[in-house]
Length: 213
Image (cartoon, rainbow, N blue to C red):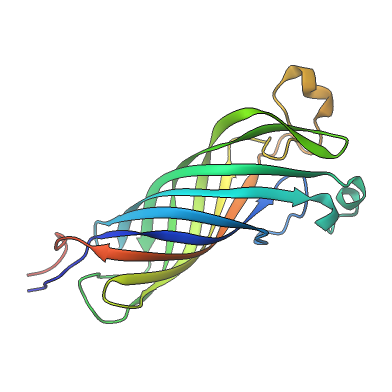
């Protein structure tokens, strides 16, 4: 019979953020601003867990950092802030039984739905200007690898992309009709942002139902 099992995890996420859209570089993972988050996981089995998180970061990008000649010559830049809450499912490739004290390592993937707050922007003379606070949804797609480093601590490294339902994090597609003349870039493609970093979580709780007697 197993004892001292853990089914809950609480912890922190630390890393960096970057943006992929109509301003700045299009490099997939290129963190340029710090990101901080809090997360909670409810491990329903050795292979999957429900995951809730709150994450926030400044989002900045500059055409001068782009390798594309057109963007580099244009010279636009912007700054925004993302405050995100997310709910989803995390799936382990290998059994990650938290009531087994031996060292375990597994890759994992995570997805779900996120809601985030940000500033609606427009770009004038190459600089971003704020219109108002607004919100939108995104779809997180995360890949990572994790291991238990002590009996109650789990360390993970992950990269999480967010496909958003807006095209105006960078100010390229303001919805205000008075600002239509300031739209630029590909207005048919929505914005992405990426959170890359590490999580450290503490495990606690009662024996899960998947634990064999």
